[in-house]
Image (cartoon, rainbow, N blue to C red; front, side, top):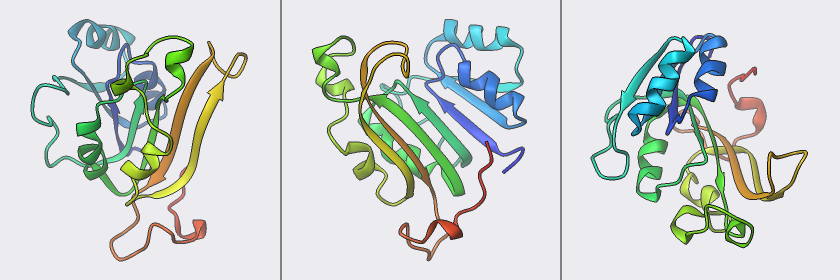
Length: 174
């Protein structure tokens, strides 16, 4: 919803933070890299900045819920259930990262950083998937050739099936 709380997980230098804050969302930007968060702060976009080790420490957002969660170019499988749990009812998850096949053309190339076919679908099976892509992109659609998976999903209200028709989904203007 307008003014909703949005988490940019593993936010890096903050390209999504600026966009989301500029659209009027209350943004929480989380990254383990203090220098990256310094770059986010330098953008001047209003955001809650959190530094946390997402891979070597407990989930830093226990009990918090977000109306939107954005994750790009980051994969740490133990976090996937935490990400799903942090999505509020009616909340939207946008997730994009590298997929198997990427190792044939560049980085990342380690299997632990590449999604298996349909892995995002399986990880977020309890959500209503409104869009999913799993494939190869090349310029001009992408800055460089890459294999990616993308997922857009919504947490349905309790008692409603993730398979409900799209007409029941909350409005999501962008």
